[in-house]
Image 1 (cartoon, rainbow over the protein chains, first blue to last red):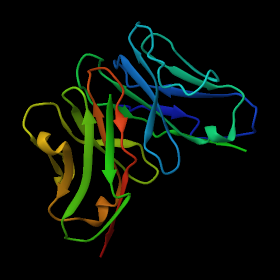
Image 2 (cartoon, rainbow over the protein chains, first blue to last red):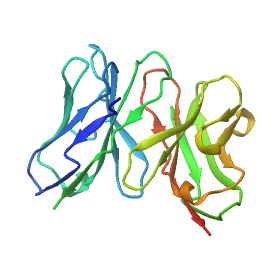
Image 3 (cartoon, one colour):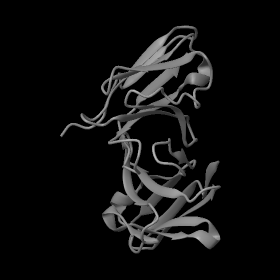
Image 4 (tube, rainbow over the protein chains, first blue to last red):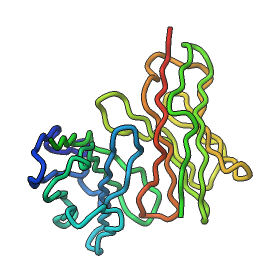
Length: 115
Length: 113
C-alpha cells in the first residue's frame, strides 16, 4: 500500500515568507508526527497528533511554527516569516496508534531552503 | 527525560567486516529503543526495536542489537558488512507510548570493497 507522502519534496523560499508543508499519512494511522532534521543533526521532534486529542506542541521552536491536522488524515505544517535557521529537512511520520509502541513510518521529507 | 548519544559520527568498515554502531541512552523510565536507517535521498526505515521483551533483538538485513541495562547501551551489530549497508543510522528512544522519539545525531556508515 501507499506509504507516507510529503509535498513539496523541495522548497526554496526567501527570508520572511510563509511556507506550508503537507503530509499525507498512511490510511488508518491515527498518530502523526512532525520532525525537523538540520544538517549534521539528529531528528528534532516538533509536534504530535493523536486522533482527536489536543496535539502535543512541546517541540515547536517558536510561535512562527504551527500545524493542523484534519481528522485522521492530512496534516499541514506552516512556518511564518521564515528565517535562514529554518532551513532543514522536515519529516512526517505516522503510526497505527498512540497507545502502543507501533513503528513510526516516515515520509521522504521536504527539504526547505531559506535564502 | 530521555536522551541518546551515538558514539562516532562516521564509521568506515571493509566489506565482510563486522559492523558495530554504538548507542547509549539516558532514561528515567524503562526505555523503548529503536534503530532506523536512512539511505541516501530516502526516508527513514525501521531496522529493529526493543520493547522490553528479549534483550537481543534481530532486525532486517542481518542487523541485531542487544539491550544492556547495566551499560545503558543498545549497540547495533552486523557480522559481515555489505556495500548496500552504506547509509546513515539513527538510534532513538522513547519512554512512553504515543510520544515522539528522541533521536541521536546519527552515524554514517561507509563500506569499502
